[in-house]
Image (tube, rainbow, N blue to C red; front, side, top):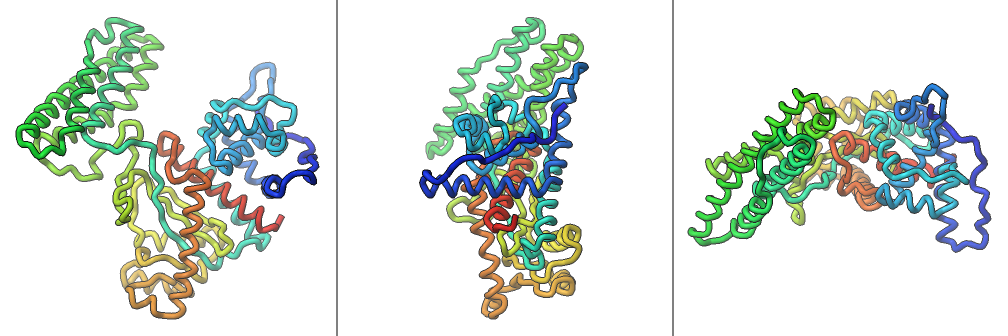
Length: 454
């Protein structure tokens, strides 16, 4: 059974002889600890999810780490901007961070265990945690929710640049690897030979010469594409037959390999089908029908008109922020929604969270809805600071609120630089949304800690 808290005294260090930077570093964590101690409802929500990891045995053995320790370790992971492995190393090397985690004189947790804990906490829980933190801050008058600014940003998934050739190569090599594992368990499950090196050479040939201007070379590229697509399609069919054989065999190890392969099969099938349509039939496949990674099939193609990065691969995230830089609300969109269609939902969720609509809602021109909806939203919000056209910026009040709106850009930059939200290194959309929630939660903890309202 996992306990909720650890009853220990904390922060008994003498900081007088330390440099100013170190004292500030420690003071930040002390204040964050005070914020966490004050908001025990946050720990209750996290504890409900983490209890599933340790139900206890017949002898009633207790788990080694409390839910509080795990939550604080994840906060350190987000604030330090490190990988889980590096986070564990830093905690092990720092008596102060061990004191923050309340694990003094105990063994430090393994990074793989911390990863399991992170995945056990649902994205909905992180949302509720941030909502609870915001409502508590409003109750103590630390933030003012009557004025908010909103914006969207793209968070990338951890994939390479997708081309038909590279996706076909990913499909072939992963399928061949898993089928080879199945063959080691049972020879009859896969009596086929795979030419992985030949397929890799085909993929490299296509990548190297697909931009050639020589018609002769391009004909060879198209022929190589046909061969690559046919052979990849064949191995996908073999993989499907292997999964059917494994289910009938009843071998637990074979079923395990087949289960891993099954997760890839839908994306692999789409990759082969789309490559056939694009490269051999000359069709233009819409982005909504494409798969951009067999490892992260939920990834979306995002075009925002940025000069330095016209195309991104990931998901859009909506952020709402109070003047104190506290993020009052966020939403991770599995499928992108146009900014102009988000304005009403921002007001609806704000009313649900804080009991009333904001007095001022500032957003950029992209959040401007159609004329009828604009008038309806103006009745619900005293000041709807969203410009309809460029000449609206000449208005003094609109100019003021647009300058206020621009402040959220700095927060977005901080989330991406300091909290590793420029690219999510976790796999799956669930973990993607959880990573965003953890980053927003850690940002809000620092805002409350620096406000001094503890």
